[in-house]
Structures are given as structure tokens and as C-alpha cells.
Amino acid sequence: MLDSDVAMLYHYETKKINQTVKRNIQRFPKKFYFQLNEDELEN
Image 1 (spheres, rainbow, N blue to C red):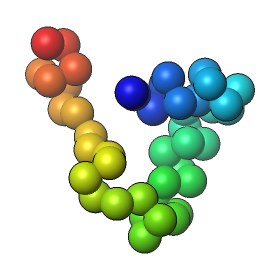
Image 2 (image 1 turned 90 degrees about the horizontal axis):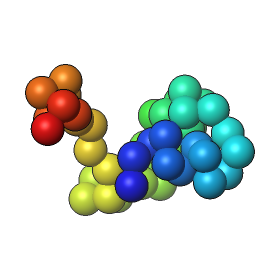
Image 3 (image 1 turned 60 degrees about the vertical axis):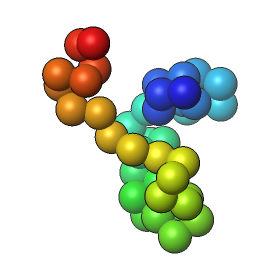
Image 4 (image 1 turned 45 degrees about the horizontal axis):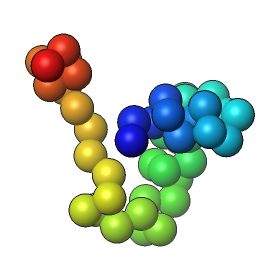
């Protein structure tokens, strides 16, 4: 599930979802999040 999917589910901006994760990084286990680069996103 992408950040945009989560934002859509919660009627929230994608940017705000990412900010919340960054501010509360200790609440999100590392195996549950990752960031795609441009090439991975295109595939």
C-alpha cells in the first residue's frame, strides 16, 4: 500500500501522512515502511 493509498483511505494529504511518519518514526517498525526511488516507481 502506497502513502497515497493511505492518504485516500483517511481523507488526508499524502504530504501530511509522510510528515506524520517522519515525526513519529519510532511508532513505525522498519519492516512496515520503505521508500521507492524513481526507477522502482516506474516499474
